Length: 346
Ligand SMILES: [Zn+2]
Image 1 (cartoon, rainbow, N blue to C red):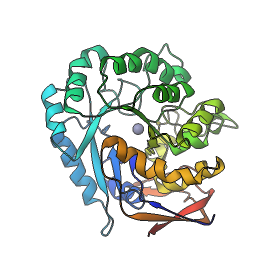
Image 2 (image 1 turned 30 degrees about the horizontal axis):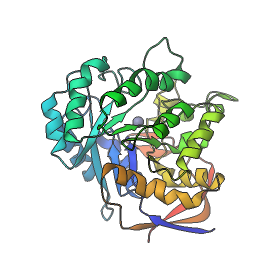
Image 3 (image 1 turned 45 degrees about the vertical axis):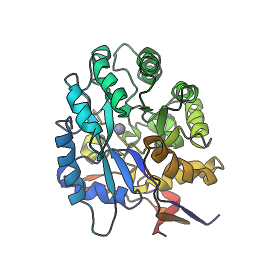
């Protein structure tokens, strides 16, 4: 196959950052994706509908003319989130849902939730108003090994939450383990998961073998090969509970290549191309469209996109570096060759 035409996809998990770098980050996503779920872990975090709409306007101001792109805003749950704000979010179509970051789990999560039990009245309001919950599914407990933090979160927190709120729609974001995938697989239709391209393509050797490779460092961290196989099986299974979310998360190069490097892989500049590589390696290119363009929209009850995007087998090199405000950012696989390339809208 040399050419692939698919319904324009959506990215159900994206970090665009804020300020001057929006002009560098937004076009990469808008070139491919019609819509994206915009993560709220700015400093300070996006905790109200008013904050989210302000952020959305800044994103749209950075959108190049001629590109259609709809940011769907995600709000940040804190210990202080008011039930009233949940209702307000439910009435705002530009807000997609709320994100749960356990405090300390990842980049800019210090304001996240410390005590999940105290969040239950807020979750009850979300269930009542039909507002989805997007979850960073890792415990931040320093006593738990970093490679086990997702599994422990699923057992300790997600499983009871799902049992307690049977009507609440929950997305286990960037699922990375066999156990996480299995949980989603075994749960009802209200429980779904996003999968990143980098977790489909790489295991933890990419991060650690032959030297520490900071551009492969993300949270949840890359796992063992048998976990990657489980993710790939889920993504290519056709099961509508699994869909595309890049978790593209740019940082200035200096903050990645550092004694304490930040978590996040910058995949937006080659997002769909990376997924195509993963699906092709699994012999499942014919399943890419449903995963990238249908399942997420269906889960969120939004219309599927109508435009089409064309991909061609035309090997190209990922740029070595990209402008990022007054600094630079290094995309995943910088300088390496990818087989598939987005050729534009059909
Ligand atoms: Zn993320």
